[in-house]
Image (cartoon, rainbow, N blue to C red; front, side):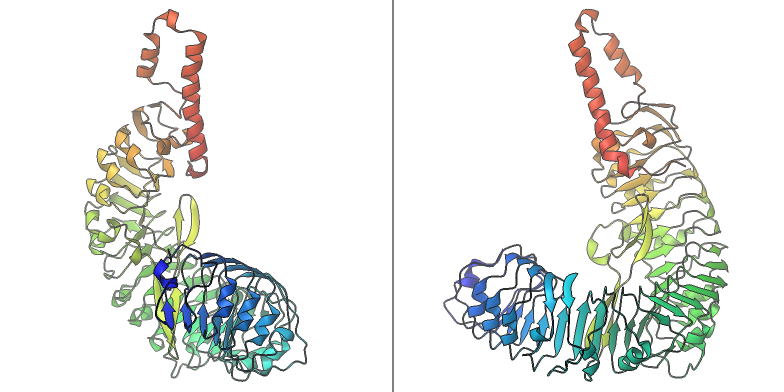
Length: 619
């Protein structure tokens, strides 16, 4: 809650910053004693309700920051009375209605940010005529229409602009902004034609983000020179563009680029040492990976996933001592993982899944690894025990390979899988652009609860399914108290599920199907309150299925175990049948039978309702 004393101050206060405090509240509806305040910063909270009109009476207010909350309703017209206001930041809320005409009275404003809301109506030059000092403008909503006179030339010169949901054409006045350094245009269907004019204009920019638009055109003759270039999720085609030495971040992912990446990395390589982020994933690139990596030692992230690249992973990648994220999944690479990657001691995410790689799982990985994704390759041999010494590993996905032997009995040494503390889950690195920190969040694709999705926050996951593993599930596996998803299906595991499984309190999904497990399902599984996905099918389990809503999925979770009984299976357990038969016949009237069967089918119904969406495949 907002502290009550804040609005009953007996002294003058000029600066209030309560941002990022998880405040759940509303602003008071009457004017508090804040007439001397010059800066009011309440961003990144959970504030809701309407923005009160009394804010327009704070005559000395120069900075009003309410962004990233849940404010709703219209932007108050009274804010136009704030003649001293320099920064008005209202973006990332749920505000609606038109942009008030009164905002045109904010002659001293240098920053106007109202994007990421649900504003409606038309924005034209009339809304921006009276902002001679404007330097930063962020505006755009799905139902907001831009309608500027093509001949209008604004009185301001912007340093930064962010536009969203632009239709038809880009505003012509945009090209008059010769001081512009930061350009962001998102979620737009506007034409960027003629492209050569746009790319020439872009040479003045330090930061350009054109994510999720409909830009099309051949990139092979384009020279990119901005420090930050983010052109992901468009319709760009052709071969690789050229890049100048100052480019630090380059993201061309999710386009239709084709051909080799060699022209980008191997042509004119002199002085290109500033690139830290290279993302070309989800295109149509082909051929072998270049061996020119020695010239790009500043790289922190390489994303080449989901292309048609082939050949062996080059040894020269081992020269990238700063590399933290390597995404090569979903290509056609073959051969072994090069030993030279041992030199990449800062590697955090290694995604080699969905290729044709072979040999053994590398045992020489560094201590920084958080995610190791080797799914759907041809790796063979044992799971190396050296992996148990990587304390930071959170995702271990070795599914669909040819691994054999037993599951290592040292897993309890992986401390990251013992803790459920979430602060270390987000994988992010920061790029400094002329004193401005830009945070880049790195996701990985994980198959959890039957769905393969991109996750920004890492989960504690072990997936060893579809291999040739044997032996029992080691006791040490039950010590991973932070584990959230466990898939050991389609192996040759034997033994029982231990009572200690109730240690895995964070478990949300477990699939042990199609093994040779036996014994009774322990009652302690009922303590797994977060469990949403359960599959124990096609084993040799016996006895009664424990009660518990999270265990009452559907019969698909238990089929293929002929000696199992109890709900949700239709097979009645002998002890239940016995207790029913020992009742005196005269007590078995229709009402009592009805009550018994009603209870049984109610439990069955609950099982279906809870578990229908969460049953893993049984094939």
